[in-house]
Amino acid sequence: MVFKNILVPYDGTSFSNRAFQKALDLAKKDDSKITIFTVIEGEYSAILGYSKINPQIIKKQQSAAKKYIYKLESTAKNSNVPISVKIKQGTSIVKEIINFAKSKKSDLIVMGSHGRSGMNKLILGSVTNGVVQQVRCSVMVVK
Image (cartoon, rainbow, N blue to C red; front, side):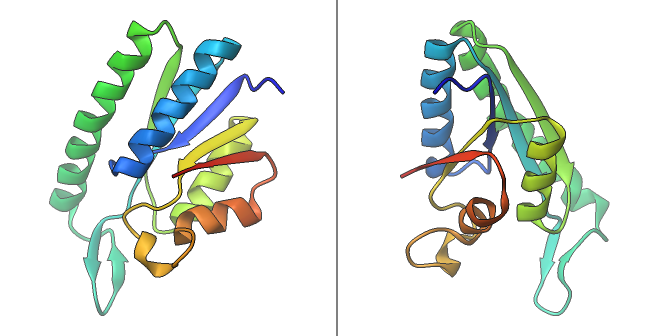
C-alpha cells in the first residue's frame, strides 16, 4: 500500500522523533508528503485543567515547538521530502489530530506509542489510543 499524505503528530518526545523518522523513510520510498502537526495545550492547572489564559506560556510553548520542528524540516528537505508544518492551540489533542487529518485528507498517521501524556495508559499512550480508535485513515504506531 502506498501512502501519499502522511501526518506526524509531534510532541518533541523520543517516541515522536522515532515516528518522524519512520514517516520519513516511508515518504522517501513512496514519494510522499509529510505534515508535522503539533498541538499547544497551554498552561496546566490542577483546578482548571489546561488553560489558554496565559499568552506568555503559549508563546514559550510555540517557540519551543518551532525549535524542534525546524530540525525536522531540515532533515526532510535534505532528504528531498516535501514537508509542511502546522502548530495549533487546543485543549483536546485527540480531537485536533483527528480533525486535522480529516481536513488534510491524510491517508496515514504515523505517531509514537507514548508521548507527554503517555503515563495515563500502560500499553498505549492515551492520545495514541484515542486517535487509533477514532480516526478513519490508517495509523502506524511506532515504539
